[in-house]
Length: 415
Image 1 (cartoon, one colour):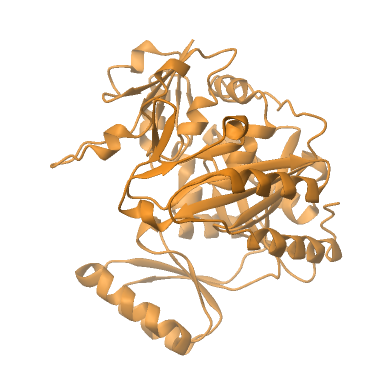
Image 2 (image 1 turned 180 degrees about the vertical axis):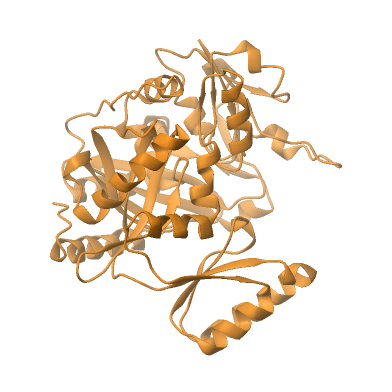
């Protein structure tokens, strides 16, 4: 059987992982069209033809030539919905992607579901944001929908935020009067989350849940779904009916802040593969990745097959600022290849190259029966990856261990 993946260049490894017992060919498409198209997006994912991943330049030529269509990322929900309406078997976020991309809608829904909800307001225009931040402290500022234009930041007070705001005002320029900001109270003392998938409102019996430090580390535990901590389980249960209504067939993750009383506040939904570290771990832990996705596209929930020796997983993201503007050769030992999940790249013979324009090169995965075993394996493999100006940042893993200890005190049993 054959599958067609439409992607923005981050999910080459996820597409390769589809190749297995059910799928022998994956057609991989990254949109490259523009008034003045560049060659780079048309190169992402090339070089894997001998493994069954075929890089294509025309999506619609292949829609009727495949058995399944897969979307790992968001912002293609209208396409997913259209294809499903036409009878195609699709795995990926449809209209339910708004649970992630429309933060204002998601926060209102959270309250409607009866979940703990942090105080949240919506402001239109940069001047309104600036005025509000002058009068308020300890807030979290997010951009609605267009997340590539602004990373979420914590506003402690106006003096500390002023340099960022000055930079942002120049960057937004004429558009600053139209930008929609979401401002929330800063809540909780730790930030766990869960990572799994959903098919028509059903969840798998085994999941990953753990802690992530953005850009520097992730540690998760393999757990029975119904044995997750209550602060996480309560949120997942409330969203079952929502996903059933949408007939959602997609990956699903969360970021949750837990306070001193053990109460969990949902701060962000992730209605796609969580990148880079959590989904890198999912590809290793869920041995029947191809079956989960293809059967899910047909509305059938398949539980993950997991090696009984894997109790914990650890992952780090490796970056190189050089790759933002230059080609980057990445050396990977063959014996570790399956544990190193590259992002925007191509393969040339037996060599790997990161395509210019993205500093996040890869996520590295380790696992074991203990947290320390998983971390040790992860760091050993990460140290084997060689590239110009690559950054080996393992501080997040130690910080996560501290969060795990705090979580234990609040009843989030991890050991």
